[in-house]
Amino acid sequence: MLQLESNGYIQSLAYQIQKEGNVCNGDSFFIKATEDYFICLVADGLGSGLNAHASSNAIREVVKQYHHEEVEVLIDICNKELKNKRGATVSILKVNFLHKKFTYSSVGNIRFILYSPSDQFIYPLPVFGFLSGKPQKYRIDTFSYEKGSKFIIHTDGIYIPAVKQLLRSVRTIEDMSNYLKMYTKTRNDDLTYIIGQLF
Image (cartoon, rainbow, N blue to C red; front, side, top):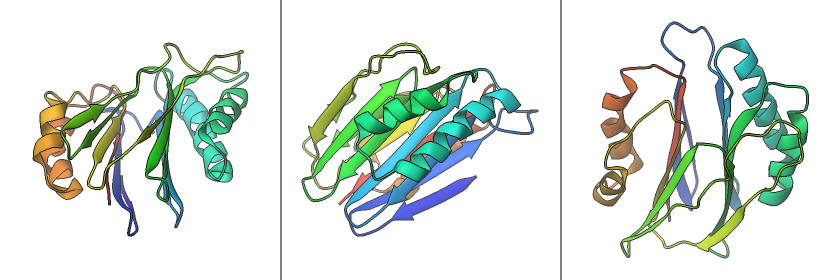
């Protein structure tokens, strides 16, 4: 599955495919660009199959409904939504176009890295574990970004060697997506990535 979301401030692309042999994906994602902000979510339900999908999709629906809220509010709502469900690792990125800042929070092993044209890399550390409805501490990071910055968020279903060099060398998200195709062939796990470029 492929989804594009763009405006004058961002171009983004989300790609998702399930584990080979599975009928549904245990990962879920949400991307939306408004005039003021861009938000994206990646959620990886524990395990695979229907129960994993139920957890990650519950997160997706919550963020879809409350995407206007701040990241610290969203991550807490997501945690509460998973009470009595299997659990999920979750990452939320929200970009404020006016102030050229982004806020990021992650619990679990979903990876995020942003590359700036000044040759700087930002990769906020996640909190270990997963969301399950139990009391949880979160880490909320806010950074400034430069025009032309590129980023990728992905689940552990895809391994990307030399990801820093990839972000540094590609010119567009289309180029990045074409490059990543070779790493989506072997699917030992559900796979989701979101890539973007900020203007």
